[in-house]
Image (cartoon, rainbow, N blue to C red; front, side):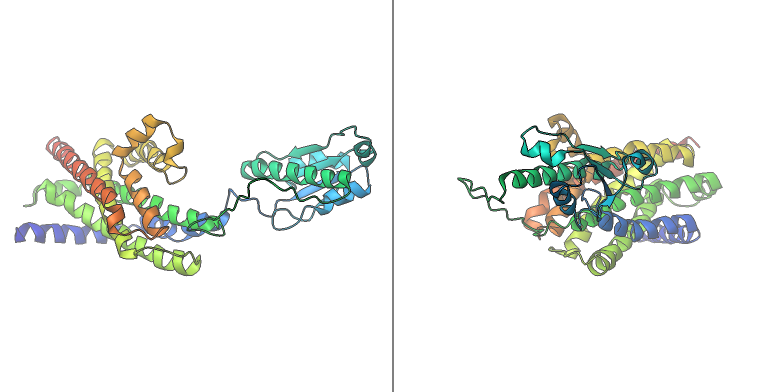
Length: 374
């Protein structure tokens, strides 16, 4: 047993030295756990923020001036007045996301009860702003017209008073969600890439044949790659959580960091085994990259990290229970957002252990067959 552990240790050190000599892989790891997290936390694609808007005021009345003054920061940039002939060119050039056209005699028709129409031109290539911004603009224009027609600002009294209390994120700060989920996605992506690339690199360079003539078993070779690459990702995850999340982005982490890292280790056990399996299926690095697309997209899109699992079809929810990402995302959100302890997330951790054991056994069997065929 001691001899086997020594073999795994030496092979693992060899893997770390191979990774150290691969600058592109090191750059990918550094980017995924630093710049990528910062971008995901600060871009806030679902929030309307400083959207450029222009207005064609053909009425130049008190009502049109009131509507124009209703657009202000932080949702919209100060509205720019342009001519009708400049609308198409400005939208084509991407200068404005929205152009509001107020027709002539707009105030007069409104007071006469004729329901005049206002045209809103939207640059739909900016899909996130186009969807949310159109609703904002419609609500703002309708509100200003209603208040102008009634000559007063009415406070509608509803029979039921709805009080909104946002738990775990009182200010609904989007960066809290985006940055932490980027860490979760980075753990899965980088662990699969590192282990798969390590095995394919051995095969392409011919060093796998050297290992076969040495007194080491396929299990020791596979375990060394899993432990060494998993250790790299685990250290990078701890760095991103302590530095990028807590210090740079100032995102509060409610739960235990050690418990989250332990869940990450269980996730790495499953995903690194998955990376070994994909590397035995692919014959080259380009094929491995294509397989990654087929595997990573469902894992990240259907695991609950981007959209709630409850909004997905029941069949998809059931199928995704076999994926480690589903349980990892659930445990990570419970620990990092809600401060859950071991008594809450132990079912997810047990599921990760079982899935990882099955993936490791299946990948080891596949790895032995691929070695015997060489």
